[in-house]
Image (cartoon, rainbow, N blue to C red; front, side, top):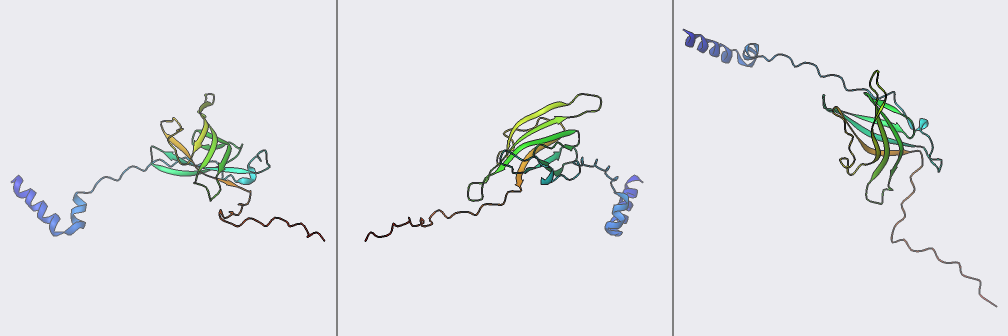
Length: 176
């Protein structure tokens, strides 16, 4: 009896096509993943503190929520704290090499964790390198943060060709 009921059920599922089979073998909907922590309101170069040369810089970092697997780009103007979940990220300085050199971006970043009812705890303070994100990693069970690039208000300098002829030296006028 049990065997014939199983065969009938299987025949019905096959006969009804995928729609019939999916009615009987449907998975429960997966629970919604928690929303990734939103970084603080969009910060830009205008809020950055100028460096010693008067140039405003902004580090672009990427944050990973290890629970949901979502990544978020974080704009961190120099000297301005920005929030990413419970983390407070302050980029003190960043620099990207000129385009004619091997690509590299460095940033001096300080990351604190602010939990409700507890004093802030410094998680990281040091240099991050875009080419080696694991070199100085943030030790946090839920979030990873690493540097991507550095934006600046300083216009890009034109690249000088390496094999350009040297400018002719000024020739003194001929003696009479």
